[in-house]
Image 1 (tube, rainbow, N blue to C red):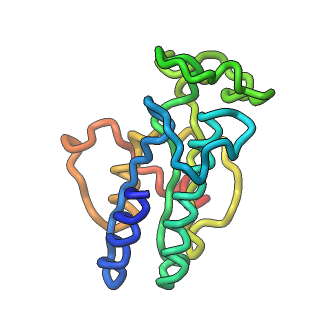
Image 2 (image 1 turned 60 degrees about the vertical axis):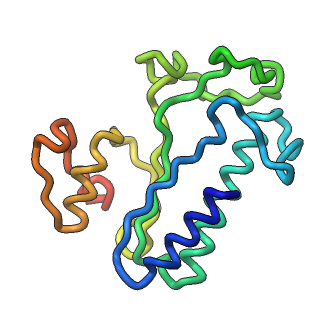
Length: 175
C-alpha cells in the first residue's frame, strides 16, 4: 500500500526528533476497492475486506514504531470522521453482505444525520508512557484535537486558529 510505504518512510526520516503524522485512510470511501491480498478475506463483502485492509495498514505503521523503538513515547490516535452508512449512492452490496453485523450497534441514524449513529465514532488513543488502557464514556470531539495536542506538546494556539477546540488532555490522560 502506498499509504503504508509513505507513512513508514516518513517515520523513518523523522525518528530522531518529534514529528506529527496524520494518515487519512481512504478505503471505506467510494469507490471501495480492497487490494488483492484482502479481497474475499472477510465475511462481509467489500466493506469487510477494506476494513481488514485498514487493520493491516495500521498494524504495519505500529510495527514501524516498534521496530524503531518509538512505541512507548508516541501518541497514536485512531478515529473516524463519521458514523456508518450502508447506502451512500454507491451500490456495493453493503446491505446484503452485512452477515449479521450491526455497524451502528443499535444507535439511531447514519452518516449525514445528527443522530448518534451518524456522528458517534470510537476514538482509540495509545501512548504507553502516559495513558493507561481503559474505556471512557467522556465525549471527545475531533474538533478538540488541536487544543488537546497543543496542550500535550506545550504549544499554544490562538482561539482564532481553532475557535471551538477544547483542551481535553486531562480526559485523554485519565485525570
